[in-house]
View 1: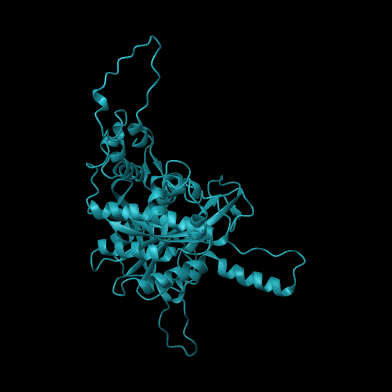
View 2: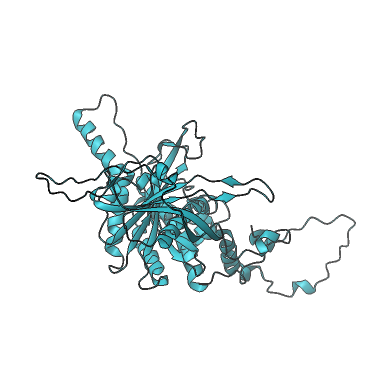
Length: 447
């Protein structure tokens, strides 16, 4: 297993199981044991992620919360017989048309390791293959249809997220607070109502969400109301001049910005129940320029709710801004590490092999943070002369870490071990010399 994890990082071609075996030098040996390792459930990705999660907690301060981002992603596939492949909504499709693609679906939990300047690096601590339920045939009996409906409930992403949240709360440090940062797909009553103890959720809601005030005490006989009068929608609150804007500094997009926010505390949302006091946070659009001296453009406003009505505003905003790192993780895992490229079909292989690939990605970043907590790039390979933009970069990228790992693993094999460079290399023929390549530059190029 250790050989597979290392070779999945060192592999230069496609990250298929064949490529991993070839990188380890086993292309001339029997390869069946490598495939049976995954198809017969001889690996347990949860144990790998438990070690990674403990390593992340060791990097945090004793009283610091564990900030975890939750999101799902798809991996396009062509084979319809691969386990878990089905038609999914294409997130890269245009907004005016819903496109469907054949793909697998995965659920990921990534924990934040904060830095001194307010930034953070998110490291995956859980990864789950989340296929949908297989629809029975048209002439299926009532028992098959009932079983299909039950499988649909268990295959729901909110149901699976609740299971993983409950397990994470059980195995983590009981004295540490768990902070969940999610997007709108997980900000609903199905997730919020089942949050464990000492767990806080920060997520996005719609701009037209219906919120209510706290019920006022009354002396009238009868049942006490659970909800007070309705409040204006988040969009109406954003345009209300009576509620002042507050300025909060937070780190995002490589530097510290000043955000304008509005806060409304102690509100109720019927989807979460009458016992959940929430606070509403409205973030004004942030201006930016595509290039120097161009006109100012603005992003869309954001509307957040937090299940802890007393959480500090600056911490709340910073925790949510860290959530974007999970999108960076998805991009790196697919483009640089080839997550989901393995050509396997069985259910166990499609569950275990992508998880081990993501675990290798987590171990790479965890080792980098443990060896170099300041995340300086002096010890990494220098970029090409024309990449002036990389010379002033303060933090390493996944590509730079992979090149450094390959240099540590292969540099010794490329150094000359004899005195062949003393020989006379003068050409005694009139033919032109063959073009030469530099294998070191080809292997250790920096992007």
